[in-house]
Amino acid sequence: MANQYPELLELQETGDRREMKRALAVRMSLLGYSRPAVAEVCGCSVQFIDKWKAAYAKSGISGLKLAYKGSEGYLSDQQREHVLQWLNAFDTIAVRSLKEYLEKEWDVVYCSETSYVQLLEQAGFCYEKSQKLNPQRLWHKM
Image (cartoon, rainbow, N blue to C red; front, side, top):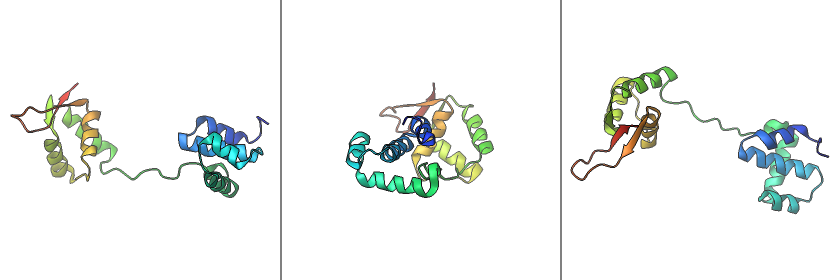
């Protein structure tokens, strides 16, 4: 029995956590385990099992894999590299300064401040809580 459905076993062992759960549920179901038993072992509903078993029957192993790949970034890889080099010229910087630079140089305005924070972290900066006299958020090189 262990050698049955090798593609499911491989995904179950090497995939994303969500893919692994899908593969385990489908494989157990195909091996003849009852839906309630599979649901208990996998920590899912019987509807979950039915959904992914149908996806596997229709599309094979690709039906169990994650479909969402994310959206294209606002900055190209080359632009991101340029921004990181620009950031490396500073020992401390405020998020506001990075926002102004990105808007002026690349015409990029992120909806979430998280995107600016991720750029700062990639450049080796860490957040330091501001003092009461200085209301600016300062990021310092690690």
